[in-house]
Structure formats: C-alpha cells, structure tokens
Length: 154
Image (cartoon, rainbow, N blue to C red; front, side, top):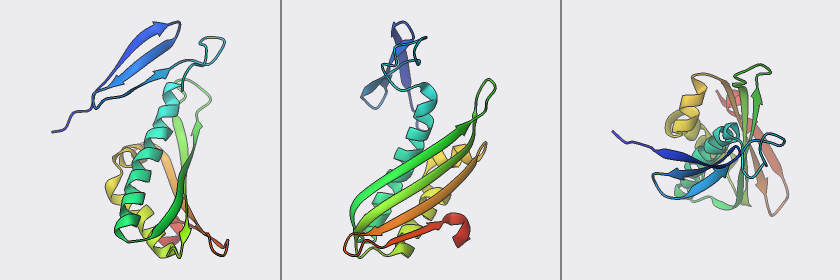
C-alpha cells in the first residue's frame, strides 16, 4: 500500500504552508477580507490535481505513441454548489494539444486511457461528480483545429 501525506501549518491569519511527503510545499490562503489571498484556496487544488494527473498521463501516452507534441494545456472548469459545504457539482476537462502532424485519434485515445484507466484523481472524482472530458488538437502547420469529446467517441 502506498501512502500520500501532507502537513498544513498555520503561518498567519488564514494562511497555511502545506508541506508534501514527496517534497515541495505551497501556501494556501483564504480570499480577502478573511485572508490575504496569498495562495490558492483549498478547493482550487482539486481541479489543479485533476489537471496535473490527467496531463501527466496524456503527455506520457502521446510520447509513447511518438506524437510530435509542441504544446499542451489541460483546462479544468469546476462548478460549486451555492450552499455549504459548497462541494463540486460538475467538472469539465479540456485537453488542448498542439503539434505537427498530430493524429486526432491518438489524442482521443490518450485522453480516454487517462480518463478510464490511469488518472487516480479523475477516478475518485467520477464517483461523486459529473466529469466531462474533451480535447482540441491544433495542427501548427495548417492552423486546423479538431475538437471532440469522450462521450462522442463512446
């Protein structure tokens, strides 16, 4: 069994320095006027974790497929409930991949593998929230854009 750890220590006001068991740290803070806004809010880390998890999967898969990726971004938009505890109610993930001679089917397959097999953050979130995945492939040579969703491919 693998263990993941984090320790949050109050620095001042509502600001916490979070140290991770794997190394590294970051500041969390509340929005003004409660906090100073010196770092992301805790709920912002959920979409950030999803973006990083699926992004690492997809770029690794595309590299194994020998796709010539020159740029890649994962854009996550998460909606929150209006009432406390203001949980996430829906998440949209868009993978924007640019490169030369990219195969849109390879991109779709990489996104699908991340969504259905590899991304542990996404697998956990899918249990409690609607999560939609889409992708856009940008051909640098022609400027052509191909867009798709995993729902379309199913």
